[in-house]
Image 1 (tube, rainbow, N blue to C red):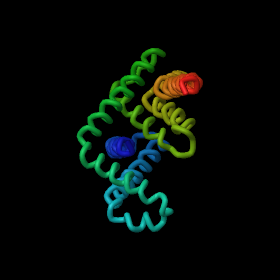
Image 2: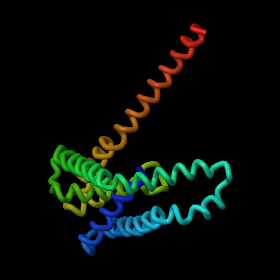
Image 3: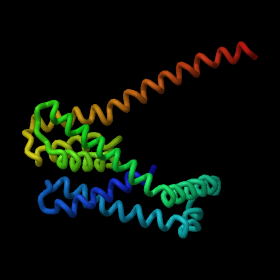
Length: 198
């Protein structure tokens, strides 16, 4: 949902406050942007209903019904499912942190659990950078910098960061491509069969 990245940004803002003055400059900048985006996101969610007239005035008439459904679904989901959203986001964050911790251990690099959780949080935030798909380049660079901040040497940080991205990003891309090919093949095979039945 759109609310899940918003929750991650709130966590990032908390990290900025907790580690203010000790994080690398690049990470502090990213977390500061997260705080601003969090505020903008909250204002946007709270103002969707009140600004409906303005949004519909800007949107083409053909999109009014679509926006109405989007607004209803977003606001209803956010209001009714906040506890579930927080629970799912926390579990996802914990899994990403554990993944990074085990990945670092696999390359014989020592990272604390709390450090892995913080780096995973910042990596998750950097995936929302809108300049590249899933923050490609930005996420890897930020992860390496944070791992170096935790005390890893450059080579270990780079290997751990790349393995982490292979697991939590490229494996999903590969699975998605495989499913897309499978569905396309299944649809192509079903089309001649439907033609024969007719």
